[in-house]
Length: 265
Image (cartoon, rainbow, N blue to C red; front, side, top):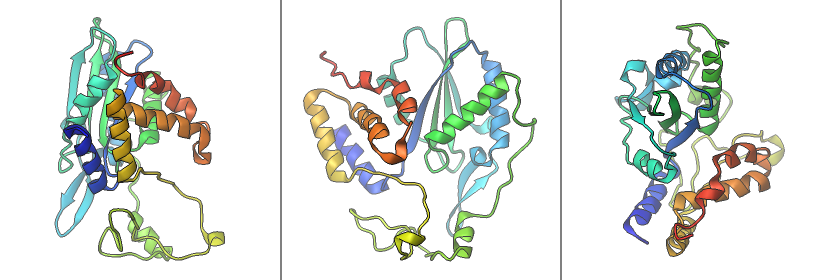
């Protein structure tokens, strides 16, 4: 592997799946940048986790007090088609200072100064892909003057998940992991229970370091970006895996298949 691929594999191994999420949002109808900023500001006030940052005293914790004015927003002029691979690489180099904020934005405008693309770069612990889609669905409602909530309205911030788990009878520990090694990950909220008593929940499927290593090597040999391979896997998984039914409607909209064409073709 090259240095970049080796670094990608090592970061994935050490973070055990923790990552920053980069989302590309296409604006289909003309939108003024001031209108976009106004809508995003309302959403920032409405959702507490958009105002999150990490604070450390004797342990790390989330504090939701970041103003919208503190969120980094870069504005660019786009004179040609969006270069997804190139811009993804640029975004991946950005460092999110979680002590100050949990996400940043890049806005791309056309030659008329109207917004054409919005890129959200965020800490995955705060927002996943579905959260981003929900966020921009609400933004669309705001832009269409169909406000789903009032200005300065905010959602309540409930008790921590840890407290609710403790009340529900789940075990807790002082450390994030227990009995964990590089190949096995156990969360401190796990407990022994028969299958009949377990409830449905979120399922995370992560590639082990060996598989990621092999994918990076195959991609390098064939001139295909690792991000393109992962996008292709997600596209297939959306059809095959039972937990991702109808997911292809979202994933295929990204046209990930086009990204899988080697540069020499």
